Length: 135
Image 1 (cartoon, rainbow, N blue to C red):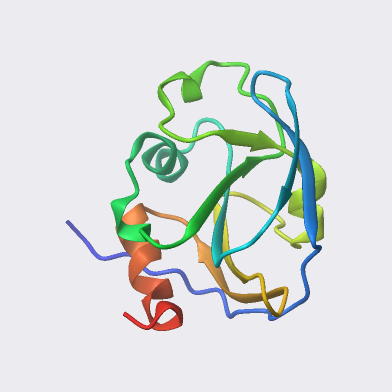
Image 2 (image 1 turned 60 degrees about the vertical axis):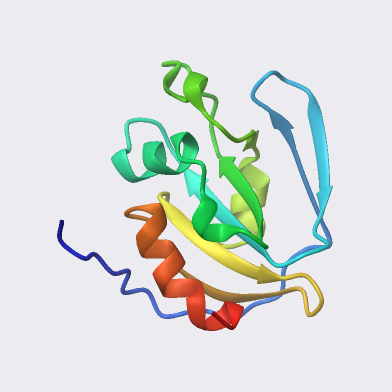
């Protein structure tokens, strides 16, 4: 399998204290980060996104994971998701995520984005953020 790499340069920036949205079932959500958190922006009809929502994401033990979409899943692609998906277009704006599939790694203590990039697969993202995790 080829090795893919994101080429976006990190744009360190401040993030909000609380993220607001709703879960796919419509339940409102308000999330305050208390641990380093990987935010993954997903969309439907996206292979890399599907890998994230259907994987067990063991590569990211010790990290919080927040999967976010700007839109509902009208096609039912995320019905087999192993993780809750937050529908929150405002969160993507707050994090300056312009298009999915994309990730940002957040340090909740400094409330800053540490690194970011394009999502191809969980293993690729884990490799790219490893230097920020001390692994």
